[in-house]
Length: 248
Image (cartoon, rainbow, N blue to C red; front, side, top):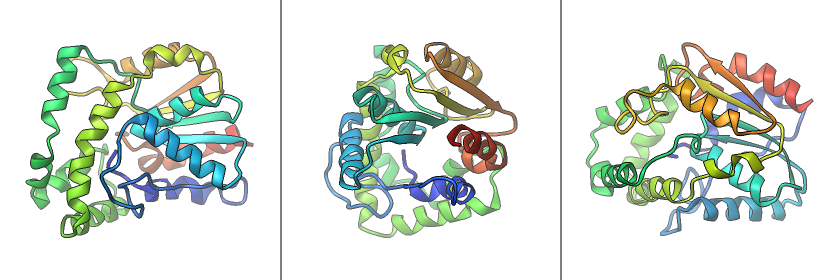
């Protein structure tokens, strides 16, 4: 949620020559078309399947980060015969929310609040994705600041709250036991976004991660120390060898 395909470039660079890697931007993200699209997880999964079908891809290893992890799990449930393996980085969907907690989260993410963020607040929000913000991630901040000066920013600010609602309205946690595909899951122990600190201040990332993995029949969990919400960027040197072996 809020990122784009460039967030995968370290992993893709490390896998080039071994497997065919395809990254794409969801509607309203990155280079894809902005518009008043749905932001449900089912819509994003539908778009992803249409994309795969256009390319004639019938057998996939799906990778997803954060919201993308929840989408990947939904896709694996929809077409288990087409998804061979899953690679999930800080996936959403393991953390569950009560109805009052959902109401709180839906009220926090409002388009007008996002539109009012200052440049410094945008920078601080990116810093929260990492244990130590790496210099080679500065382009992510600059991309957002450039977007802020464009017409696309309004679409973006309207989309983010809808994506939050989309994740909350289509929980994947009850269906985890039905995901039979071999799965590798990466979480940073210092993830500041999972669990949500506002509604679950006493929880720890490793609790959420282990709870989810216990419900997945063929999952392996990797907890990375000194790592935040972006393990495949911040600790690509540790994630990449695991992924390379998993896909070999």
